[in-house]
Image 1: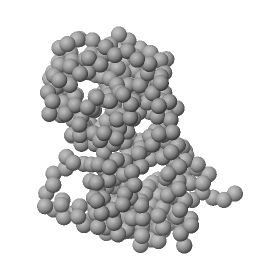
Image 2 (image 1 turned 180 degrees about the horizontal axis):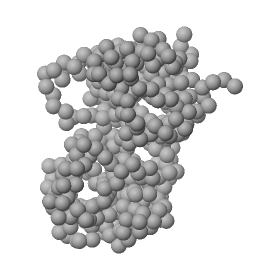
Image 3 (image 1 turned 90 degrees about the vertical axis):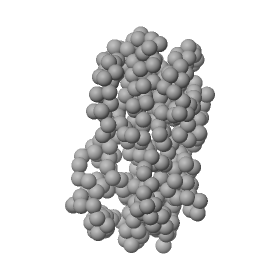
Image 4 (image 1 turned 180 degrees about the vertical axis):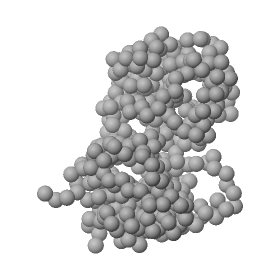
Length: 372
């Protein structure tokens, strides 16, 4: 039996973020008898998906030093490619630095070299040095990549600009997994003691981009309307401790639930009554597709691409609107009654169906076999 070709994915880390979830969704659904994934990381630490990736047949490789230098990156990535290849493709998920990653891959003779932009990162301060770095790396991406992928037009324009012919590849999800299930809703609400509550959900890293302080201000106004509101936040990140402290300052810590390393996020979407994402910037926000697939109403900032508006469940507000205006919209949504089970079918066969994503990516990877 013919051995599967191998693709090397290059990340900074393997946490439970949107990029990592996307790649693992692909890995779970791709034909692993034909295509297998390996993973390379500059930081030697156990990741959230390590065990699952290995169980699926993947290998995880770390740099032998975490020293931040171009030479250390070149030496280690070259070693991994040469010792553990051959690789039919190298798929880089490190934004602008993909230019250097794919330069190394090209030097090693890898045929398919993919630069993948997943976010806009518009919140980053644009210093003179940063602008020079982005300009140089964009030229390196253009010169060394064979394929330029992005999760949205915004993400493509941000990293690649107008001169690179990028392809939008939406972050597909397993729609069967994200069907609304009343039994899951009831079970989670009972587990968290939320049976008779109005539940607001946020899924995302505790980082500046996700705008958690604004979420807390909105929640404060919601509690002024009704003490029945509860806030559930799933994720981890550098700002979690400060957000916890802010909840205590506001006096509603007991009305907030913080959750980590949740593998069955679909059950929490089912349990919630509204999803909130007032991001300061966002490439795609796959959590919004997941939420809509479960029939969950979503209230999101105007900084999120309109490409996620795939049902009648999305409501956009400017982050310049007041917290009270956000709270008022959410409170009005609580009056809506509708059939949540019908939304998964609306997305079947769409660009957000993981089957379509896997088909498109497989064609790119396997093209490497035909290149001499």
